[in-house]
Image (cartoon, rainbow, N blue to C red; front, side, top):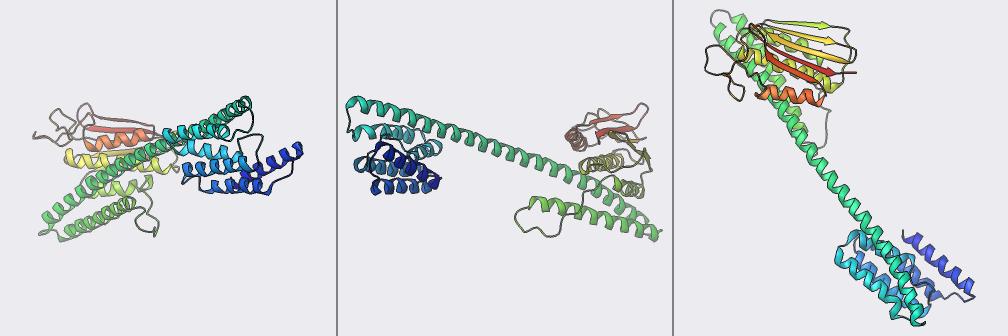
Length: 372
């Protein structure tokens, strides 16, 4: 910017001198170059730079008068004040710029008046351009901050959903396995040993997934080491179904249609829906059996989990916990944290979710997710 401004002013001054038949004055060229070099500090000190440029232009008028009292360096300095300063400095800059040709008036008052009018128009254009660009940049910065805050809120909600799914599923499995090991410890040590092995594996998986989420929370604090493990998807449904069977839930798993890779976010959503639905079956439906069905369609994928336990009832607590009724119950309106998390996941993927009790008993969770 400084080099370009110096070139414009020097060539303009030289061209005017040649046209008017006057000799070039080295002092005038030097003042124009010095004024352009001052623009190097215009972002940090716009008002000070404008004052220096005006002083140098005033000295130029006294040593080597220009036909026009408005240089390219002055235009850039005014633009910088309009973009980076407040209303007070802007008004003062315009007043000083207009007063300069009148202060060094060497021609008639009429000619000076026309010169002042030209200066006012040029100053208004320069200041106006700076104000417009400054306002646009501030609006863009505010929008970026708003988007950043929204992204942080979305990430917090995502992490909250992940933590709920991890804790609800793995801790429930660990609790059931620990109870089974205790019950079989005396008369069936082999069953107790198998339950403890499953308990250890579930705890290790939960710890790994929670470490991965904590790595997301601490991103930027430490240098990135090994890449995080991939998120679970449809390929992990066999594992989650096997864990449900070992935990005592009779679980069937069926896949319809040609299996194909799904987008990672869709695969994770399918996995979390099945995980949460099976966890709710173990927590709220006692020893009920469950049926998991995954259907691949041309442009979407359907996942359905239904059980034959007791359906939802009005006695469920507002947070999704079972009431004091003899038979377990589940929330049917999506008020529990698990159902809310599932609805949010499906909504983020642009799909639909149904969660309701079945006629004659049982509960059904079904989601349709676009997966083109």
